[in-house]
Length: 166
Image (cartoon, rainbow, N blue to C red; front, side, top):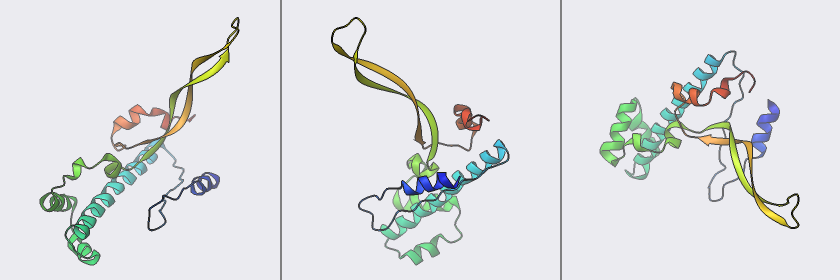
């Protein structure tokens, strides 16, 4: 498991234009049951939503309302999700439910089989010259998803995640 984490961390690329080094938060955890895993991932997604809602309101207060970070933090202290949604809508005309799923749900990485179509030059039997032929190969790739994993639909669409053999 340490090797997996080291590979991920060492492959991190710097994004041009950022003032600070980008952050990376990852965990490798082995859970005793599929239900424990689903509960943990559901909690992480809910936590992502809570943090993003707070940060969305916080930065709107700082950048558009001109509050200092301390003032924005004081204003948000003790607020619930409904309060934050109301601030976004009434003061900034932002319906948080219309924000992209990537921000509200986070990113889930899954292994997925994808078909790759490529053109190859091949010499076919009984043919004198090479021809370009389309070849389709099935490969397993990491795919980024921005979706709800708390409900059953995700787990029904990707049952292989919980398979013993995967």
